[in-house]
Length: 114
Image (cartoon, rainbow, N blue to C red; front, side):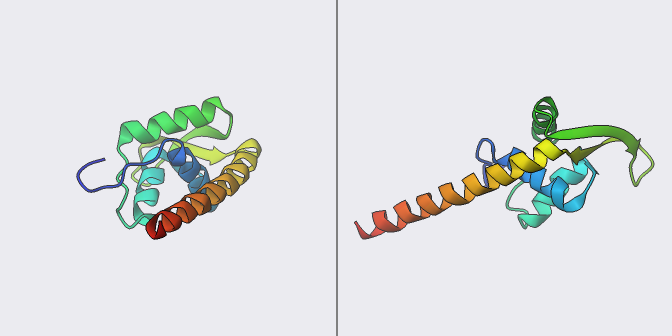
């Protein structure tokens, strides 16, 4: 991440990866990173090391799986898919994120009035 690009809160990248895989189906790491950047309207910039660290964590937790295939440009690439456990975790984490962001918004609104 560079310059005025937003820093990704710890843990939120994993949530975004899970959501991207749920929405898009199997993708390779570069494709996942580019899709998140695209959806964020380039507010987030994810480097290769960051996305692959997330993918390793998610595989270790068994929330995603990876299989080798061929990318659009005919290169060997690992394609990642969300697992059943990953879908369950995504649901839990998304609910938690909604709850936390609502609480933070409430605190910020109250603090402005204070």
